[in-house]
Length: 605
Image (tube, rainbow, N blue to C red):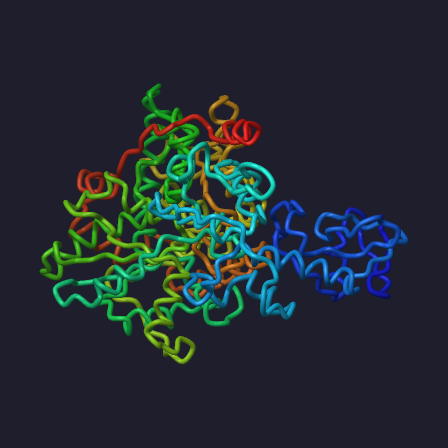
């Protein structure tokens, strides 16, 4: 049903239940906002989008006010402008004025609002006592001195991720955004996904900086510093330099990393291809034990294990399902183990001198590389993790004109990969890549190019499923003849909760389930350039699929460098050497959920 209203003398017709904010934007009228973020519930708390509505007793927040037939809205009246300006001035009164030293300088939404409103001084004194900065986790830093109480972080943590680690504490002027029942994030049930940092409009939540230690390693002549880049980076890094989301900058990224001083520029895609061989073999072995040997200890469905935020979630919320997780390390950690064994041996380098730097779209990767079990090589597998945003900053600090760089190729052998590895970046991509290989292994038949994409597992629907009936199986896998393999894909932890509960309740008849922690998969990771809306996710996803489609090799088992590493070093997929270096175990880390404690704490306050 359509609704017609007047906005600043413009007649506007929009569907019912549209907010005034969205109706204005559709008609070309810009209303400033701060607490509002696309895809995340708006609390209407910041009062930056106040507008006049004829007949209303007070100004109305446009982000939560629904349109009505005959409504007359004034967005730029003096009353509305003054009220919005007052809201921003009050925020600035309690906000530190250290903009030049802030991680969000030049990219801060509050700073931009103040500039757009012409605010050059603040009329009100600060009333806030300084708060300690929370650096208690490996991945995320919280500086509540800069918090503007927009509650975006609360909404994404509770509504999108379903974790509930963050919530308002106390009331009125004493309100702060608290983490669980303690002051620090380390005391809360937090998966380190960084989605809070991705939506924060100011410098109140951000990733823990690894730029300085990476510079120190690059400047140390005794260190052999190599870098690996995740597939999602190549369709997002360009945004740090003004490119449209989804612009592929793989070659320029490689050139920039060489100019920064990395000895070798490798690709996490190499170990993504390796993951498909390891994880696919693990799935087939589980199926064989379950179907042929009738082994009651085999746990199906098997979950993928590439996303560290998802692993953290499983350990804390569904530890009873840990046996269903693939034992494969993530591609990042596989790479680190091989860099300090296979690569070190091949190049005759002392592994003690090798420093592995990862560039990831994900803040949880910082947590993952610090896990105590991630040292199969005898050394820490991965030394430092940079987010996409941090790499953009590193390139700028070095004075590199990114957009003028030539396109260069990654170094062999651990820089060679296939299109199947590229699509690890997208929700459903790991499943697509796995099906490309498993189908050919089981049937002995090559998949036609037209069938490489598995449309049912693509896109931004929260839960997706697909099935394929296996026919014409080779003798080694004849027990799968006629079996309809059922797979599912979930992205975002609220959707992961749904599918985990189905498995826990015995209501999921799937064989294989892919879960990605962040909405959209890695392309929507907490360390990607801001701001990541669904429109941005779609563009990045398409950029990754174009990368895949432009590859001469598009199936992981066709990667000659992967074939060579098995022949020279690892032996066979899921063999002894592979299990030693490329597989791991996970732990029951369940604690009492914090959400209920937060509510009780707020009431007590």
